[in-house]
Image 1 (cartoon, rainbow, N blue to C red):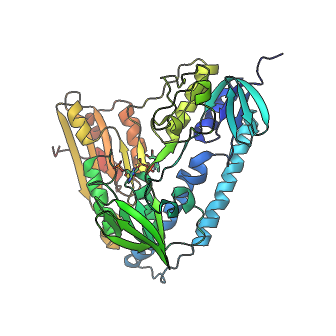
Image 2 (cartoon, protein in one colour):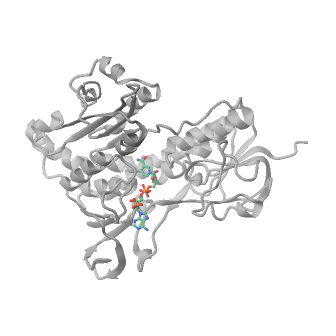
Image 3 (cartoon, rainbow, N blue to C red):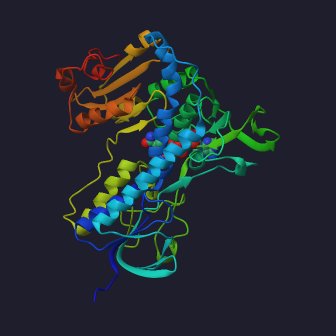
Length: 450
Ligand code: NDP
């Protein structure tokens, strides 16, 4: 008789957990996965996918405006929120089914229930008890709302996907990924949109030139960005919510979206009781092999609070599967993780910021191009693009690329391959451009600006 019911028990069927489960099963392991919500986790249900559909939806008002100078007469566009919301939900339900099929086809047992570690090798899953040789915690993260009077009146990104009514006036708190993405979505869909950020410049951690550029572009698109603005209280009043700031400013809105970060979802699954160490912010502490302080319990994805991005969680999940059941060769390279923010226009970024690169490379060369995209020379829209390449002057290697402009996410993915492969500026220069595109700027920037 086998010692345990499963070789691997995965808690959480988000991007990372699903990849670990499928890859482990493909390597011959007996695998089960528990999910208390919908299959696919944050990315599929309340993150990347529905958000991107909303971004697409929010572009049409501008597209209709832009069409005029291209000869199209478009009647005044009229937006219907329930249509977008419900069509998005239909697509998400389809994806939930695909996730179920993928897991079942791989031979993974799906247990739709809350799972918690009850003893080192035992899990309580709903009313039943199962045992596993290895356990993988892939429970992700949840929106975090700061403490202030009336914070129970705010919504988080989770709620935006199911709002009964579209808010005509929105205040967004925060200046990170979710704040700037939703600022673009709400403004594009026609809401009066304000964003209040506690610092000097949103998107801390991104290249400063890009941050300044994005701030200008957001303001151009009628997002009222308030800097050094700290919320003091939110109160209900007839017809809306009254928001007070600590500098005595106030404003009235229909909804307040707190996009003030996410916290690792490590509570309520029995981890400290079996000896799994948590950091002060709740992140599960792991070593380079994603092993927790209990050697047969592993953790990946947002719950370890390293790089909270879907493709990183997927890479970590594949890595754990190979360590446990394969040849264990796979490593996750965190050095140059490309990322995109689907604000409008998009940001795409790979490698260090100019500020960080300057400290690391003594002879840094900076190439930069700012231009009006061809489309807008006719549409008349006052939207610009920014592209930057950072080059280590000692080796000629391109170490980073940053862009703010249409389809930056799509463009930077290919550039990231070149950078990860060690391409030099000479390699970029020797590559023939594709004309006329914005992307060709990356192979035609000849003079360093700094
Ligand atoms: P971020 O960490 O990106 O941003 C949080 C923002 O909230 C920061 O501007 C931060 O300010 C501010 N903030 C934090 N605490 C407070 C507070 N107490 N009061 C006021 N402001 C506060 O988190 P998000 O929630 O936007 O997103 C979470 C993560 O999800 C991202 O970091 C990213 O990894 C991932 N994500 C990725 C996306 C993508 O790939 N396109 C899209 C959405 C999310 P400060 O800078 O001063 O700390």
